[in-house]
Amino acid sequence: MRRFLRVLLVFLLIIAALAWWWRPPPPLVVRVVSVGMGEVAETVVNSRAGTVKACRRAALSPPSGGVVARLLVAEGDRVEAGALILALWNDDRKARVALAREQVSAARANAREACVLADSAERERARVQRLHQQGLAPDEPWDQARSQAEAQRARCLALKAQVQVAEHQLAVAEADLERTRLRAPFAGEVAQVNVGVGEYLAPGARAPASPAVDLIDRSCLYVSAPIDEVDATRLAPGLGVRVTLDALGDRVFRGRIVRVAPFVRTVEKQARTVEVRVEWAGEVDHVPLLPGYSADVEVILQRRESVLRIPTETVVEGRWVWLLGQDGRLRRRPVETGLSNWRWTEVRRGLQAGERVVLPQQREALREGRKAVVAENASEEGV
Image (cartoon, rainbow, N blue to C red; front, side, top):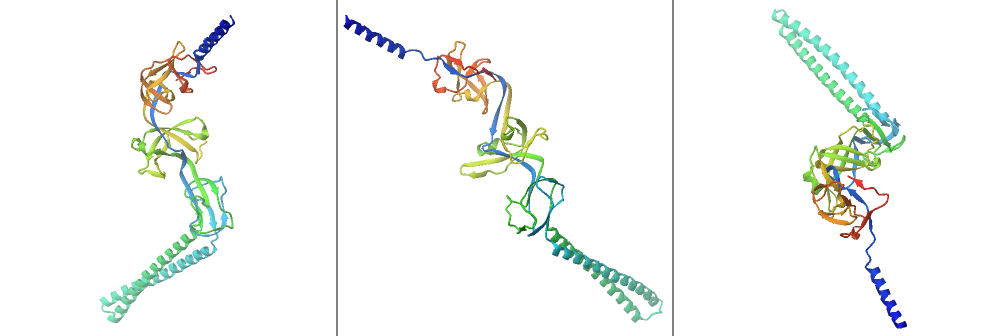
C-alpha cells in the first residue's frame, strides 16, 4: 500500500511539473499606436549639428600695430556703420597730416601766384603782338614777350602739378592715420571686446578667433548645416526645410535652401559633407535666436498629404509589422510601404485605418498568436 502511494505521489508530481512547464505564458504588456491618416515626407537630415550664423559678422582688428589710446565701445553696445570703435596712439601721424595740409596750402598759393603772373605775361604778349603787327614794335621785344608768356604758363602748370602731388601726399598721410582707427563696417552689436586701453596690439598678432572686437549684425540670421555627400545630388536651392534648435525645444521652424556648396568638405576620414545654407521662410523677429545655436535641418525632398501612415519604428526590416488584434493576440502582418522618414512611414497596402500597431519595446518577446495587453496609463496613441 505504501509503495502504491509513493508511486502515485511521484506520478502526481510529474503531472504538476509538466503542467507548470507547458503552461501558457502570461499576456505580454505592449504599447500600441492606431494606424491613421496624415502627411508623410521623404527627407534628408544633416549628418552633424548645423549652426545658426549671422549674415554679417566681423572679427575686427586695426591694420596697424600700436598702443590702444581710446576704446569707445563695450560689450553689448550697438554701433552704426562707420562709427569709431577704438583708436591707437597716433600723435605722430596726426602731425604728418597737419604738415601735409600746410604743404598743400603752400603749393596752392604758389600755383595761384604763378598763374596770375602767367595771365599777366599773356596779356603783355598780346599787346606787343598788336604793336609788332602794326610795325610799331621791333622783333626783339616781341620775341621776349612771347617767351616770357610761355615760361610763365609752364611754371603755372608745373606748380598746379605740385598741388596735386601735395594733395596725394596728404591723402597718404590721412590714410596712414586712419589705419590707427578701427571703425564699424556695418551697423551691429558688439559681441566681444578683447582689448583694453594701454594694451599693445602687434600687427597681425591676433588670430581671427580672438579679434580685438567681434561685431555681429543679428538682423539677418541663417542656418549652415552639413549633409552627407551621398545625398548631395538630391539637394537644390528652393527645397523646403524644417529646422529645430536644441535651445528652443520642440519648436519647428520653416525654411528653404538658398545655397548648396559647390564642393565636398572633408572634416575627418570618411566624413565628407556638403554644406547647405538655409534661410527662414517665416517671421522670426520675435524668436530669441542667437548666432552659434546648434540646429538640425530636415530637407523635404517630396511630400504626400492625407495618406495612411504609421511610426517608422514599428516597421520591421521594412516589410512587416506586429499588430494587436481584437482578440488580444499578436499577429505579424506584411506591408507595402511608400515614402518614409525618421518619424513616419507611408503604408500603401497591408493595413487599414484604426488597426493597432505594436511599438517595438520588447521585440524579442513578440510571438505569433501570443496574448498581449495594452500597458496601463498608456493610451492608444493615434497618428
